[in-house]
Image 1 (cartoon, rainbow, N blue to C red):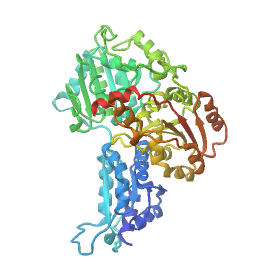
Image 2: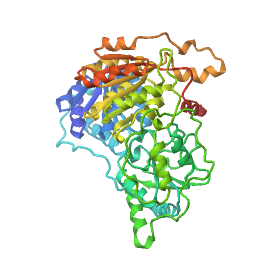
Image 3: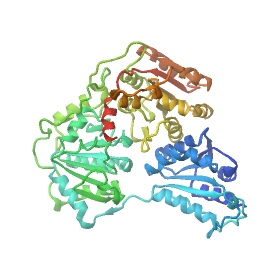
Image 4: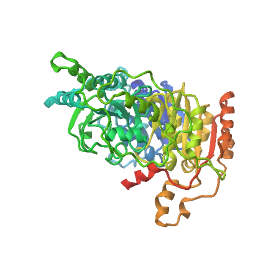
Length: 568
């Protein structure tokens, strides 16, 4: 056995089930060793796509992502995807060949098998992206198999609570006194819906998420959906009117708090996170608690219901936010369609949960419920009208992946998802061109759902090589391209200042024809009637993926993007 084979076998024994990559000479043997040991290899057409596929697969499957790349340019091609994963703390292992000079004093002081296992443990237990360099000369060295077989590595068990200084008791006190609490759950809370809803029921809290955790509370009558730039006017109003906001596994960064404007000026802010350094990193907090979200929520519920704690119901008082709470100047919303499905009648009023709030969440809780003026015409369709039409047509059991760009708010705000496993949002590095690869990785992690990729024209053309991957894998994917024939974010950012836009605008491209050339079915949409082509595809055998080339209106940028640019 050689070292490359030992590394591949060790990673497979640790639990590496699916590997993404582009194979060259430098990673040929280690990749084949992984496959021989039972791993599935998914070939991408570009290393950047491979890294993002592995990232999305890890996010949506709960397993470590593995990406295998060639030395030198293979690694540099993958760096954008690796940076996205690292910034998102995705458990990801990057296997990269490394070219070394024979005169190098490179030295191995432990068996390569142990090094591979340690990398896997770091990725799982610390939720880190790990680069495991594999020098070419070292890979080729003989290696005696280590005695025994490494055990599969699993993540740290929930239950970690650091109650030093009485932090849990202090948060219980804040919750017990709050009349208008709001919970904002992030990616670190995606495993804790039941615990958070139980606690929220005790204290009368409304429920919201960061963008990456969208769908976590879907079906609850108190679900405000996303907090931040994608927040509905109602969600923004109610979060601003809170007297206590608790972030659960959520960074509370400028995107989630809309540059801090959603942090209640007269209220308090608490934060719960496994990472102590995350507490107060973006906004000042009145209280930070270190611990696993589910464990802390459970401890709080027990504290609030213990006989010594007294009644768990917050003090009586008005549940409606103070008059004058700011509402974002969306100017437009959504809402030519009927409201989406809702849960049953809400429980008895307490905290922020009054009959009036319940009625408003039912009537105004989704973007499509908010009226807007349809701007379709002149051979282009309003992206809100387009997205509402798609929401009505596509099956509810879907997994939605979003690329970056001016368009991204429309699918994020107007396409519903069934739960937290229905939305994959690789935006930590804010790179365009990752959306299609994200959708591929997410589709493989959730094979029982219809994969939907939402892309801009710039990102679609940047990642067009992976169209072949979608066809080769036989994925029944729907790709929606919001085409404004430009890098729309730059157009709307710089045009008000009179700058020339020749470098960020482009002539029309027949994206439907490009897709058909790769083996897709395709439809071009300029009016709502054109969506009949989508309906026909859904009724058929879905034996080929579908690309929807939507020529969208482009006279102005999205209001949420204008808000986002305040941070630049």
